[in-house]
Amino acid sequence: MDKILEFTGNHTLLVLALVVSFLVAIFSELRRKASGTINIEAIEAVKLINNGAVVIDLRSADAYGRGHIVSARSVPHDELEAKTSSLAQEKTTPIVAVCDNGISSTRSVNLLRKQGFESVYGLKGGMNGWTQAGLPVVTGKKTKSKSGKGKKRG
Image (cartoon, rainbow, N blue to C red; front, side, top):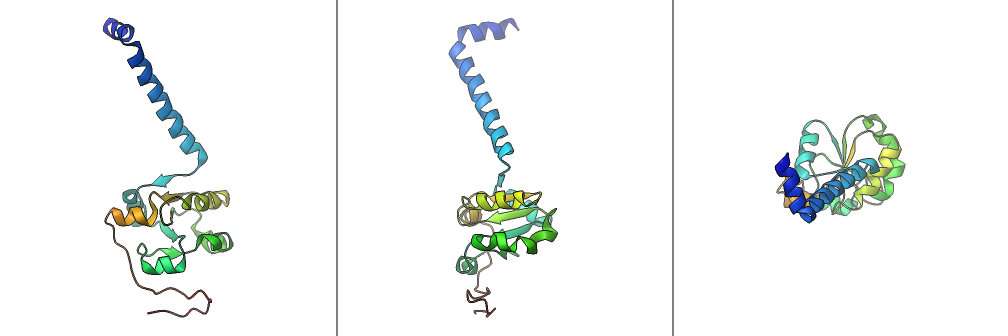
């Protein structure tokens, strides 16, 4: 104990910097938790998906057709609020929201949480982060046309 006090007395600025950085780390973590937005890494998303999580792809139908996560549902961000009723049975199931780069999914995560969905996460880095992690992507244009007639492209 005497050596700790002696070290602290001799290196006040160093100890002060350590305490401040520790408090900043705790404060930022608490703020992140309080905001309700939790972004997860691609590997954490894989674990959730393997345990039955639902993946919602918030990108446009064209971007979804160019490549998406296996079994992801295409729900463009503009249409999410109107389509939350179709997700109502998933309120207790973990949901991973995916956008292009992980930034715009934050709004969708907040929207879903306000509507009572319990476990909603944004994918950190979005599809860009997913592909950079070397994880599989389904390609092909098996999506509905924008006209809403349900035509399949191929």
